[in-house]
Length: 153
Image (cartoon, rainbow, N blue to C red; front, side, top):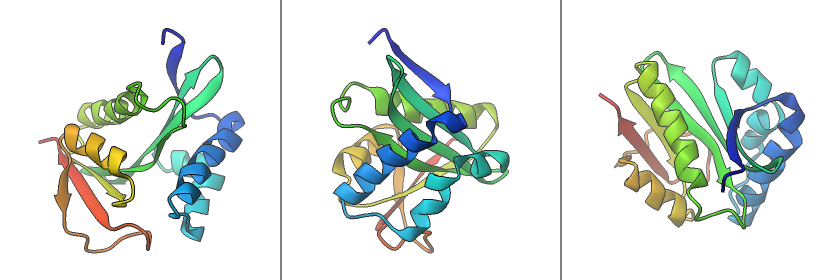
């Protein structure tokens, strides 16, 4: 996949960002109205310190991830997806690694993510990367039944 590149989000990719994430959210019956804030306004999150990365092959966006700061010491992973036909090629791993490396560079101590037991392949990847299951105390989304964190220090 010599044509694979990772780029930072630009407004011209908003439709693809939204479409890719709506696809998996609806496929697994996980879509909630609360998803729309980020799907419709990635630039708002970016203005508040988030990073949105896209995987692109031959000018086609095939994957997304958002790294959103919670506070000085922790960030969360949001809207992580790779489209069908490109899964299993290491794209998701590389997107996650970009976020992990950025957190390390910025001295972030913990990366948090919330997910669903319906997303078995994603959960397997998170565990492979060293994320550990933690108790869910509060959540942004009703459909999330798993919370994981990666301690970087």
